[in-house]
Image 1: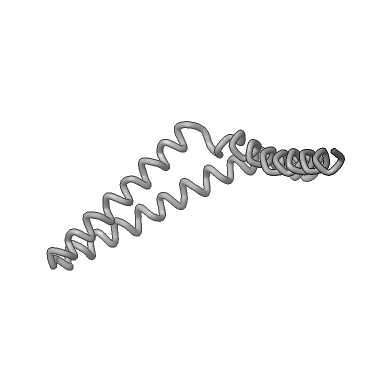
Image 2: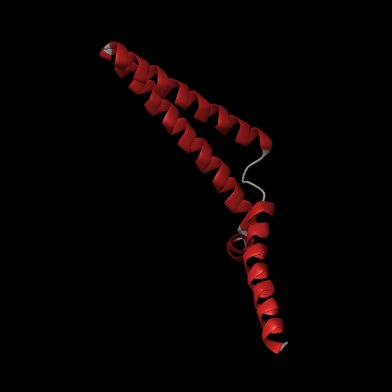
Length: 106
């Protein structure tokens, strides 16, 4: 009886150890507000569209147009990176109250 109880408790404890962090990860809000996330999604979709168009031009053998697409892709990638920086920077500033409290003193 004691061995059975120990194994049941062990399995229950192991399940709790696995389930609690998983639940916390799912419950966390993604960074940024809804509009920022939507703009980022649209920028990423535009980047994918440009890459597909560039690949199509390469398959057709039109390397001049492919070079133009490379320039557009580079600009779009910079825009996506900037959007991500802004979203995560604003999220970090909201959570980093200690830094503001400590250095915000006069």
